[in-house]
Image (cartoon, rainbow over all chains, first blue to last red; front, side, top):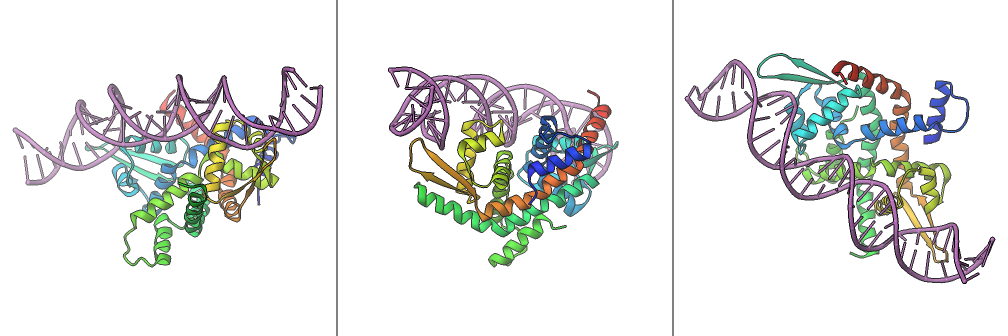
Length: 139
Length: 139
DNA sequence: TCTGACACTCTCCTTTTGGTGCCTATAGAA
DNA sequence: TTCTATAGGCACCAAAAGGAGAGTGTCAGA
């Protein structure tokens, strides 16, 4: 199993850093990237695009479900900023905007796949653990 | 690539559901599990335990770094509830509490590993994409 | 002529998140 | 005798997240 420090160490090696201490800047960057990217809506939108290919704004909203327009706008902007998706505006009326995964986005979707499989495999165990916890701790 | 709906479909098959529609209850459960589990502090604590084995409360705090006592307490409670870690209290004074990963926790750490590797591999590209975005959109 | 579709933006409001500081108990160290 | 370490709980407060609803501009269709 690879640890965070292994990972960061490998990054430092790649980047030419020599001392074994973790560079706070690099660690902060990785944490930031993970925090952005492990977002709930980000993963769901990535999944929607993986499944359906190129989609329009409202199509994403319908497929994902339960997301407000505000959050959808904000999330796709962030994803575009991070290079996970491309946003193509067709200058017609009514407006038409297409969203497509980039290669970076596809790689992330693939990486996150393991967590989905974990959830699929163990969600019943998580439920059982929660029930046992409630029974144990009372309430 | 496996999609969310594939995953949910597989879960429904396991559970004996017949209709092809996604059960809202199952989907909600999976989303909930993912949301809990994809939490920033959860992943960092899991990593700390993966690296160092059994740890005490303040040790986790020191290793993870930047986490308040309140968040640490809250997060380890949630993780214990979800069955990701075990919490062993030694009834001595001063208090002594040990935290250890469960098998479920180890599996999740392994599953999430792909995302860490992704971050390691592509964080420079994400940075570049952000810089390009800022240059493109201005400010 | 009126409505709706599209892809947003903006304001207002509530909920959640998370930080800080103070409190507990007691053994052992200074 | 006072201080510290330990693993928290509790109350208060600031900041951020996120939802609801209205507005926008234009054109196609009823």
